[in-house]
Amino acid sequence: MMEMVIFISVVLGMVGGFAFERVRQRVEPAQAVAVATRPAAAGAAAPGTSVAKPQAFDSVTRLRLVSDTNFSLRRLLTEREAERLAEVEGILADLEVDWRVMPQVSLSDILAAEDETAWRALGGQRVAMVILAANQMSIAAIDFQPMGQVREEDAVLDAVRREALRRSGIEYIELRANDGSDMLRSTLAELAGMYGKA
Image (cartoon, rainbow, N blue to C red; front, side):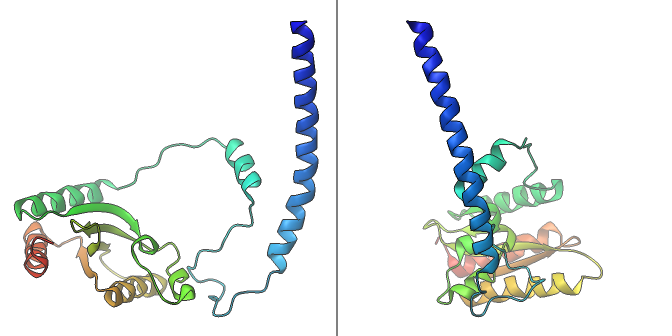
């Protein structure tokens, strides 16, 4: 009796799997065509810009792709970024402010905009660190600027971050490789003076 139950379960599983595969094969091409022929939204960024483009994947396709791929760990911070993070946390502790530091934060997670197109123009823009007040609102963003010549595209992306943060009222702190601890401490102390124990 048990063998019969197992046999029936296996058969039903195979039939269900075949049916699911047939539905997926019909749905995915139709969705791909719909996405490919969908008109661009008004005000959409021109090709080649940094605006994130939505993937033409439905939830079933996403699950299949993820299930068929091996993932591995990646470092969130470089060694230098980790050192700077610890340095900022130490300075804030010395200043006795109830603030927290969050690394690798997407601007779209901390900013809102009246114009959704402008908000989407932030794309995947990130800053190295964000300082949060006790109420979990952002006070300042910290970024690292490379030494030497900067590519034009990178300069424009820097301007995007700088302008978005300025318009939101978030302080933007740009650190260069040769900026020492004294400069960082002075900047954060000035920030603490502006916001107090916020």
